[in-house]
Length: 309
Image 1 (cartoon, one colour):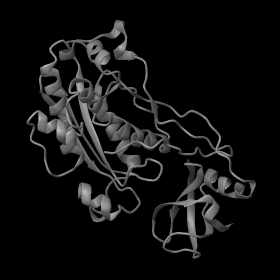
Image 2 (tube, one colour; image 1 turned 45 degrees about the vertical axis):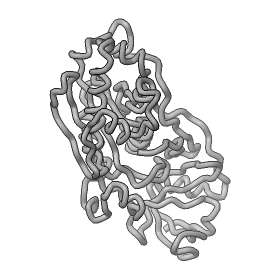
Image 3 (cartoon, helix red, strand yellow; image 1 turned 180 degrees about the vertical axis):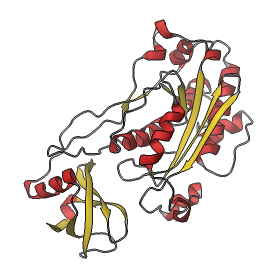
């Protein structure tokens, strides 16, 4: 998990738009007085992701882990699935979670995993939990958007925010620090399901030390939930000379480019453009590179030549 960088995934249209990953929503569904539930009547899902990096713009999900449970600790189900990101996992990231390129090769794609994950989440009355939730919500928002899938409507509680609110004297609020504070055994393996199980244990400890949290509204008053949010339009300026690239994105056509950058600089390569994205003022083309058979990103102003196949 890491710091969320704002998503800038372009839609496949002549006018490219940016989505906002999420906003801190007002209480809706479970958060209204008309739909307040006793905590013992609600089911929770703690979840975690492992990824190829920190940015949902350029990086991808490589593992999903989740556990469903009740407030009394009763476990109701688990989900654990590796994901083929269709791009290389950097060596420094492999050192963190231990997931190698060989492990994800041949695993289901995110397009196949998201429907299973959505089914596991179930009805929107289930409350989701994640530590540093903006990171996981950002990657899932990006993935659901790329797959043109409906966003889950569940409220999400960030246990990082819960820790900051209830344990202000803790030296930091990383998951392993909070787990150590509660004397929860924390696996040295940084994997999605293992971290999700720790999030569950941490949340149950928070509930045990806060007996005044008896209803969902008590929980939402303490830590306002966040929600997955739909894309909000905002134009990305693309010079007219790249119009054929936009057309290639719209119809899924492969093109040949010469790129001034990367390990194969100035070498002609065949790519299939997927989308455009803007990061810190620079526009990037996200595409499948047929030379390396993986997804890559190319800064638009460094594409020196391109033509249709």
